[in-house]
Image 1 (cartoon, rainbow, N blue to C red):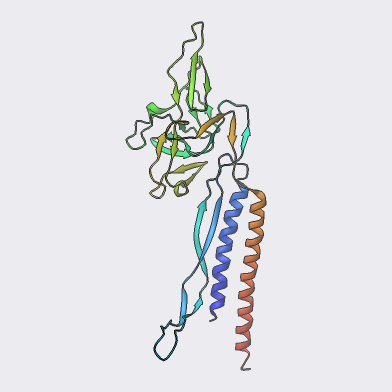
Image 2: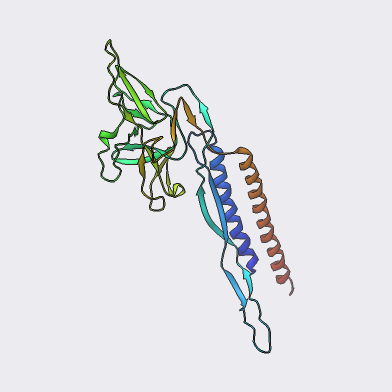
Length: 274
């Protein structure tokens, strides 16, 4: 059987995967905090028909002769470049300018997100769309104590979120007594691309990403700041995605042509004896 046929099959599979990733990117073009994916390929093993030989006293060196056996999927990367910031005039819509992720928790499980569309639940806790609690800088990811790190605002209190992450809370009434402020936590990673997507705009730390480092915005450990009344949107560029989609489509078509041509050659071989 012709090796080119199997090379064409491998190319078709890879370009199909690329189209799947592009489709997911386009589907999430308006998803807050979404980070686009990217597929890379690498060549598969090669069959050596003639090994390389070094030079001798009577003859010069000779390069190896190898026939490639197709391509394979290399990586599917998450590109963590910032998305554009959209003004919403909602004080609980937050975006991070700079590196880092919001820290949220549910059932003692910690997740990370760039989607800053938060709300107040019926008990006054700041939560995301799925009810995960937003945590402050007292968060201890390793040893727990997560319940005490949830940011809480009572019904009789007004608040203001500053660029350094401080949630300024002022009690209502004549005295206007200020309460102890909480500071929204920012998590940073040595390798953000190693984070694992969990759905719902959430990420989970992995061995590749490294452990989360909890810092305060605009501190000595972080230059990031939190912008209230705004949301970070998807970093998907439709023009780029459409260009990649056309490239993947033509690549898929070219590989189908390899299979068609190989089939025609096999048909000629079968028809040699009639």
